[in-house]
Structure formats: structure tokens, C-alpha cells
Image 1 (cartoon, rainbow, N blue to C red):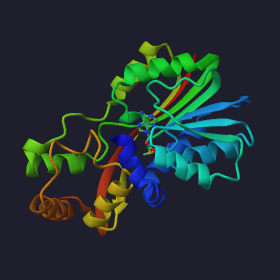
Image 2 (cartoon, protein in one colour; image 1 turned 120 degrees about the vertical axis):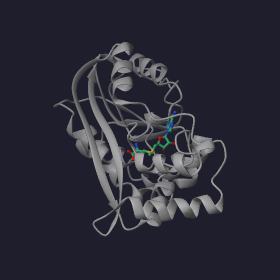
Image 3 (tube, rainbow, N blue to C red; image 1 turned 30 degrees about the vertical axis):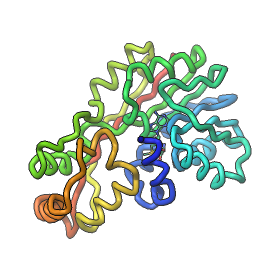
Image 4 (cartoon, rainbow, N blue to C red; image 1 turned 45 degrees about the vertical axis):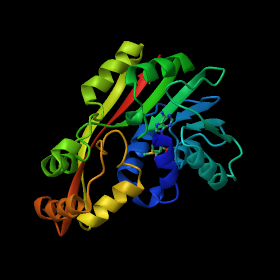
Length: 254
Ligand SMILES: C[S@@+](CC[C@H](N)C(=O)[O-])C[C@H]1O[C@@H](n2cnc3c(N)ncnc32)[C@H](O)[C@@H]1O
């Protein structure tokens, strides 16, 4: 399901991905001076982080894994000029490349997995002893205004699952065996032109519709109109509307 939804979003994602870009930048800026022989990226999507990583380590081979087939096809074509980037369809929860990597990176992707502890254990196995894992995560407070309003407007359609919290993520990383070297936990308000633009942007990013923001039934037309109108009124700011993003970046070693 998630793979399918992100595939649908592959063409439009990059135009609306500012919070994701900021997170990808922080994943790269946290890295210490190093010279990895190869790199694994999990949840590579349209390659925002991949582009930054290949800028930082020119020509170092990257295995860029994503669960959405169409997303991988799109990025393989978009990055045709970078033959050292190997685009692979795979699930971060179980992916095994056949060898261990000295550097693994991931940004704005692993909050989607159904079993975070198992995913971190799998990543730990894929990392060389002494290797580095730089991880950017979207956390529970992300889009809290939208979730609050949805609960008010259609309580019976509240999504059953939520994004992982900061503490859950940190604890699962440590339980998997990683050593926490550095971390950065941030909350940021992003300004959108209006409520309609905001909802379109997060839909096109592939943020809506997944386990977190879609309930057991879609909103009716009437509920959706109320959502737009109430969002516009309640979260107006500086001539637009705001949406909160809670993120964390972790620099980890094995
Ligand atoms: C919001 S995009 C972020 C992409 C990119 N890392 C960035 O920073 O812009 C999330 C990506 O994670 C992928 N994804 C979600 N669950 C995954 C999983 N279990 N394994 C691999 N990729 C996954 C989606 O298909 C999507 O392309």
C-alpha cells in the first residue's frame, strides 16, 4: 500500500518537500570526516538525500533502496548520469545487500515501517563494525494541527497508528545495539499559502493517506470542506497557515 502511494507521488514529491530537504541536509551535516568505500541508503525516494550524499562523497558507490517500484524507476531515470548509484527495490525492514556497509543513511522514510525495532536490528546487521548510521526521522508531533482537527471532525475515522515518538525511536536504536554519538531534536512550523495549498502539498509528498493520516474510511466531501475551512481559520499565521514538523537526526555507530 505504502509503496503504491509513494509511487503515485513520485512525479510531484520534489516540488513540495521543504521539511524533508532540511532533514536530509541535517543527516549529511552530522557526518564526521570519513571516506566510506560504499554506502547504503534506505527509503531513497526521489533522491533528495542521495544527491547530497553523492555531493559529499563523489563517485562512492551508493545502493539506494526504496520499497516503491515506480519511485525507484523514476529515480533510476532521473539519476542516469550517476552510474555509481544503484537503484534497488527493497524493504528497509528486511533488506540485506549481501555484504556490510561502512555507512548507512536514511531520511524521512523509516517512520513508515510497521516494525521500527526490527528495522533497526536489520540495519545494525547491515552495518560494518565501527560503521556509521546517520538517520533523519519525522516524529509524532508532525502535522499535529491536522491530526487534532481530523479527530474533531471525524473522530470515528481517526488513524489507529501514529508516528514514532522521539523516545521510542531513541530507545529502539539503543536496543538494537547502536551507540548514540550525536542527536538533534527539532520542532519547526512551516508556513503554507493557505489550507488548500497545504493539504495538496502534503498529499503530493505522500505524507497523507498512509498508516498515520488515513483512518479506516476516507473523509466525505463535507468533512473535507470543513477541514479546509477550520484549518484556515484556526491555524492562520502571517498571511498563510502553519503546520508543525517534529524531526530528529541521530548519528550512530556500531
Ligand atoms: C517522504 S519520502 C523521503 C525520501 C527521501 N529519503 C528524502 O529524503 O526526500 C519516503 C520514502 O520512503 C519509502 N519507504 C517507505 N517505507 C519504506 C520501507 N519499508 N522500505 C524502504 N522504503 C520505504 C517511500 O516509498 C518513499 O519513497
